Amino acid sequence: MGKAGRVRVTGPLAPYAASFEKSLADRGYKAKRGQLYLMAQLSRWLGHRGLDGCDLAPALADAFVAERRLSAPSRHISVRRLGLLVEHLVGSGVIATWERAPDSSPTEVLLTRYSRYLLEERGLCRASLRHYVGVARSFLGSLPGDGGPGLEGLGAREVTAFVLAECQRCKTGSAKAMTTRLRSFLRYLFVEGLVPAALAGAVPSVAHWRLSSLPKALGPGQVERLLASCDRRSSTGRRDFAVITLLWRLGLRASEAAGLVLDDVDWAAGELVVRGKGGRQDRLPLPVDVGGAVVAWLQRGRPRSEHRAVFLRVRPPIGPLSPSSTSAIVHHACERAGVPVANAHRLRHTCACELLQAGGSLAEVGEILRHGQSAATSTYAKVDRRALAAVVRPWPGRAR
Image (tube, rainbow, N blue to C red):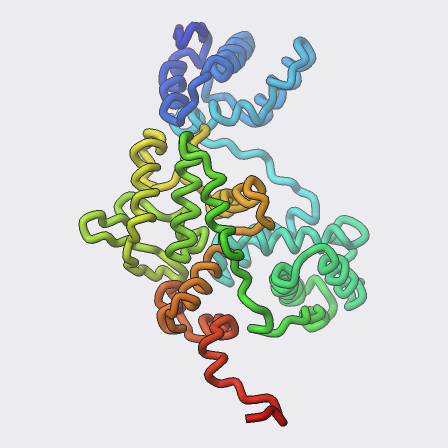
């Protein structure tokens, strides 16, 4: 029998109540009563049926939620709300595994095989896997039937119709990524003998000219407005101020800022280790304003946590920021400041453009942005007015 935080937990889950409460506290949850009450309900439900904690499985969780909703309808009872408890029981070894029976529909069976092919044969990383599988799922969903039986008659018309429909709702970069992933799936279907012809060539190309557009930087004073919108009296505001300052002054990518750990900051040398694309590591100087913003966050904002990431979520569950969360910080700051909505990469462009305006060279921009090839930096030549003025030719017929 266990008693935790005034909630009495009896039954087969009682021995784990105290450790579950501690786990919630370690992850930043202050109001733990609701989770413990849910644990007590589930424990009594299992006990009445002669079941132990190790018997808990997805099907039993579904039955518990369905029964509780019938007896006492409430939005607070859901399988999703059991997630923290299930995670703790799995981590404690009470439950060996927590896997639902796989969907046996033709579409899901095909996508499972395609996922295995991408991982094992093509060496795709798991971070990219969901994007490739997502395009394949959308394509199959656009076909008549369940995506399996209709593949025999698949032709270029269906492929073109899908691409045109998708391109109407996404930007150029997303459209190019979508067509690349669709070609991969169509090649797989042909290799497996699931379609009568190789249809990867039927995917239309997205019109896009490399380096045809200008790098989009924030306008004068807009970065200062973003920074001023962060309430540095709060933990969230101190974190957001530090993140935006870091992205702007050092031109970091969102993934690089999210991946910073405490050991990456060399305070004595005034340097920062940045882990970029392809496992590349660079040491960048730590400007005074960036260091001050990070120190304010670490000393008076960052929650206590076992995680070594520099930037953490302020609300539970406490954990490292993801790249998308890092970019969302910039997005929300734009909304607060009344600036056109931008993502984290816009600050990277702003860093490069301001460096050129201050008299820096393209080579210096490439070093700061850590470009692997000079061609990636060459796009900023179009915003280097000094360099362009030096090579411009006079207008024909102009008086000398």
